[in-house]
Length: 277
Image (tube, rainbow, N blue to C red; front, side, top):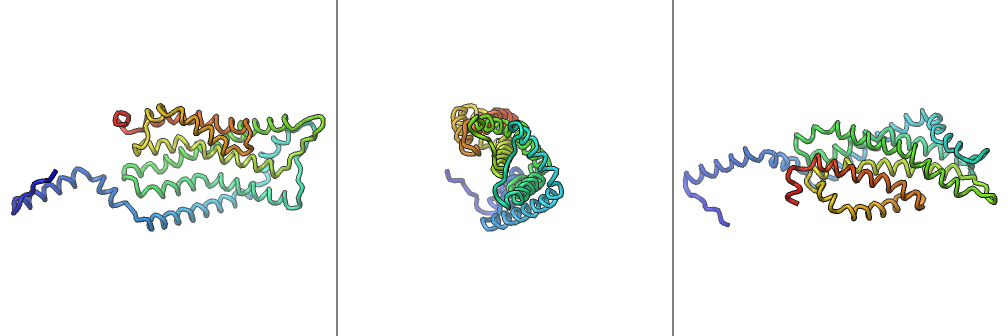
């Protein structure tokens, strides 16, 4: 529909009044418009955050190597104790143990640097946020770190021992001696640990999407059957061993977190969003 215009001084004054009205009633949109960056600026910001993350991980690795022996025993001793009586893990290469210590130190560095990396993620998305949303930087990093370390703790104390016990019982027979390679055992441990740490970020992701108005609790409930299918597929894809037990260990927490995320979406979604959907 065409908007009628007024010519002359009266029309000019009306236009100025209208401009002032828009400026006064829509300050957040003007703020967001001012904070938008070009594609090249986004790439430059991404480069800065990646470099900062790498520096943080390197610093975490330095600290990790100082604690290496203690952490190595913390990981390996309980696994060795679950083996049949007198059982030990083996190494078959001259450099395997050396590289294993390097990998343990790197994993520890990733865990130590996780809050810093999450902070870099926040800084990358912050230019697209309103000023009143940017003050949630510390709560975001704190809560995301808690969920990440919660996933890592669940992997260490529950998920991996369950998978490890299954493989031990399945691989022990009167005709077979179960002697796992220590490098393969740690690779399985690291995949489950990091995988569940990332999976436990689901409520944080849902919170962000709900605040942006992209999903609602009603939407998640209505599409629950599709979520079950996606969880089953993801559980199979990210399960380190590809076995049924591994899929259940990865998929079970995802299902629980999805239900928890429905509550998160209901609390933090925009009011009236379900009605609009």
